[in-house]
Image (cartoon, rainbow, N blue to C red; front, side, top):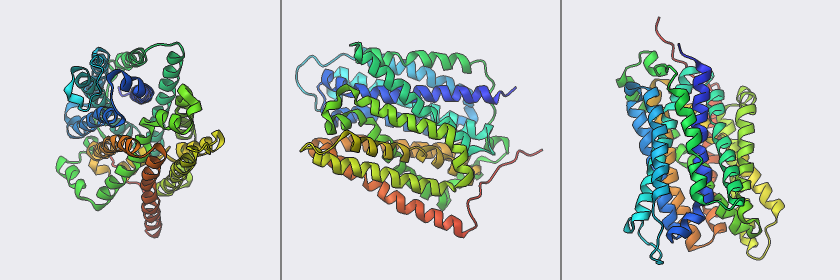
Length: 421
């Protein structure tokens, strides 16, 4: 018997683990950099393995989930987390006293890279399973339920951020902070082992693999995938540097900078979990995405421009809070709405299309994270933010154009696949 509510909760819990790692990793970047003597560019390259892994995990799911089954892959994700965290904790620190300019030149940084790679693969598998699972369980309510599922991403950021902050106040090491992630991982593994999983929506509707792969050539999918590159880089790449960015712009924050990430995550959770139904019942998803792009643009531009004056003491806490709030609200609906639009407008693409969208998003973040690190090394943090602000500038124009095009054609209308009787 398929228990939709329990499967949804298991999906939420595994996504919470995924984002807990994200926020704890963001908090410990500076400690890892100090232990392994890595520059911003090198630590960015090391962390980029997560996004390589995520992309590999989610694209692999796109290709095999219909044949291997969602339950099997969900279990594999939990095992990947446990093994990846173990490798990171066992990676020996740099004892040479010399900065490392090649991640693979030392055993410790190589093991560190592999550990982060494995956690990234596990994160990709979680996305690759839970997105088509929720789209299948709630095929007539995809936008709301996918957005509610992804409310647990910011909830994980909150939990992970508070854990990292609290353990830091206790003087505990970055290794202890990462080790905590094993506990909820074991929890969701124990839960899913006892549950029965359905076939994906595409399989249930008996849409052939040939028809599914043919959706890859649809112009709409190509456009959406290109936009996913920009939305994901705008949302997730700055988050990975968030603690450092805020310390650079407001040095008086110190270790409390992680609390601003917790704050923006709280905004995202409330909006995704409680406001998504109301918003999507009244507004086109393209209208929502246009508004989101405007707000992220305001937030990034505000931080960048104010941050440049901060070099002379010009950035105040109030201005920073306003900009962070605009950015936090703006990025809220990017990821789940892009996935929902793909699944609603191109349902015959099944798990393949929705997971390739997620893979494209993480591939863009993999490029953007070290790029931001290099910009901060070469120029300064404020200048790096101004460069990133170019991305939502393009998104405002693109989503507004899609919104107007959709209205000219009679408005947004999702497609639903029905299982044959």
